[in-house]
Length: 142
Ligand SMILES: CC(C)(COP(=O)(O)OP(=O)(O)OC[C@H]1O[C@@H](n2cnc3c(N)ncnc32)[C@H](O)[C@@H]1OP(=O)(O)O)[C@@H](O)C(=O)NCCC(=O)NCCS
Image (cartoon, rainbow, N blue to C red; front, side):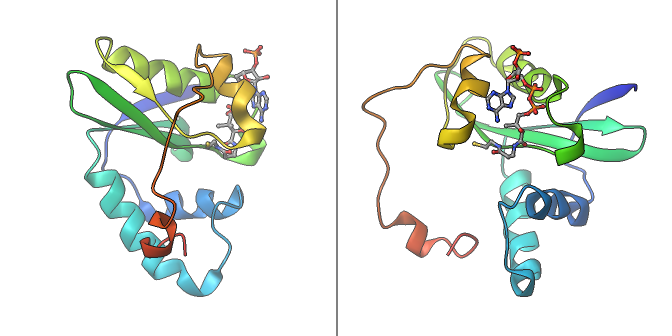
């Protein structure tokens, strides 16, 4: 299988949203339009979007928000279920890190994927913080 990697925000966002549903990050089928609108805006407002392809089929992606100098965060690292555990996620993380070699990288990971990120050099930070009522205001995730 020949996997290629692209650096572009010009994606078919219906296909992007499909993958969010496939990995069960999104569940409510009635909110698909609002999900698509907010996800497309989030990707387009990110500094860097990297995606993996099997021929012309989108099979995964990740995106970076950064000041380009000091700090960078990785978001929405998703690989289509049938393509997982083949080294593709690790390849996309490597692309993100190599794009901003001078930055400190941070991310939020689900408990289940801690060791995936650890394999790319990340460690758990005991003092990471977030605003607890943030999710209530986020139209996509509430
Ligand atoms: C997490 C995810 C992105 C990993 O992508 P992937 O392409 O399957 O991962 P890779 O094959 O590149 O794995 C790299 C390494 O991490 C390990 N790994 C992969 N998924 C793992 C998991 N869920 N738990 C623990 N280790 C994992 C692999 O065994 C591999 O180890 P190795 O380098 O020793 O061989 C993918 O499983 C996914 O999309 N999951 C659903 C969405 C999700 O939870 N995304 C994370 C957002 S926080």
